[in-house]
Image 1: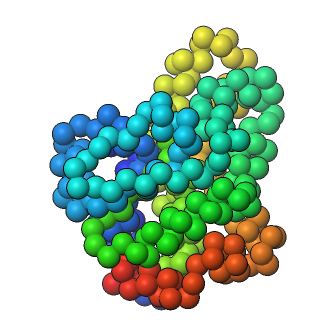
Image 2: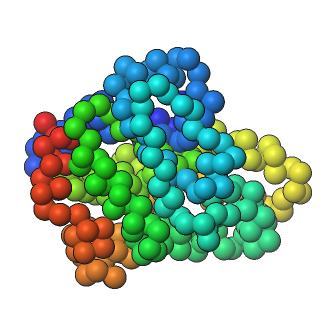
Length: 249
């Protein structure tokens, strides 16, 4: 399974540890092997939360696993369906390579600002607070951006430091290197210039500044990350308490 990891074992700022076998993140669980399914069963997987667009879900449906509840939450909304398509990014950056960082920064800012993202992340956090047993696997396509901010939100609520959140975020780098190699090979079809090849490198770079852009956006709109959680996502104090009871030890 691609870009898979258990958030269990991450230390919090208050001396506790995130429980293992409860919060799993990954790239899309599509085309799973028998070994992948066996591994997920060993984690006692009960829930899959899919952050992809309707377009992505229709094109590549998640593999069904008996006994696992599937929930689709479109973080980006239908108006941004293209933004989840690697071909869209390829065409955009081949046209204007200098747009790469700005476009990704805007995407992360929208994670904290757009109605679909706010509703989606709210639903995700509330679902996690209600998951009394088993593991929850949450994912998007590559398991980096939409999934990365989802992980950041819940880890922050569990009192994990920004340093440890960024450390987890950077673990996607190894997987991105594989995907980058694939697109570099394919990019010969496009006849890339040196500038365009450099832009392609940036597309697959795991950049902490993007995650920080989402934080900054939340703080600019709501005054603080805490206000973003309570006023934007509408997460109640009892739900935060419940998250800590379920996912910390």
